[in-house]
Image 1 (tube, rainbow, N blue to C red):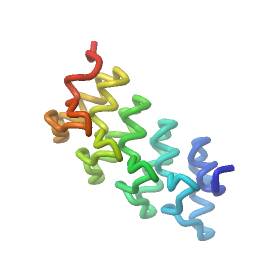
Image 2: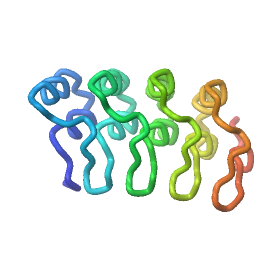
Image 3: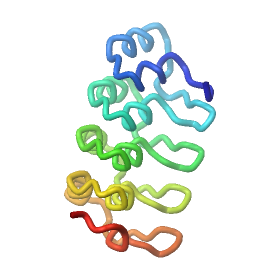
Length: 145
């Protein structure tokens, strides 16, 4: 469905061994589905830290962008998965990439009320003054209480 590969499905399900076997057999960790989401996007959405770590070790692009320019970090932040966000950031993911609306991971963490993820992003250098296309900073969004 949507051009998913077996690696996408393994990442979505959190199946580390299956993902590793698929990569060993030649699966490309950077192939995108119809929306250009990679297996790392899937792991980030679902909070599968071990799968994300494996994909990164196997060469997954930390800042790969979907058709709407969302990175795996956007996915982790929007879904409140601080463990995955931390792994991405520790491995060099850019905390300040904006999607097609210029929304950053910090905007998403703030908007969805994921305070600990927002704090992590700020600690790792996310720009608190970054503006979306509608001139909103993360502080304009829902309170992080």
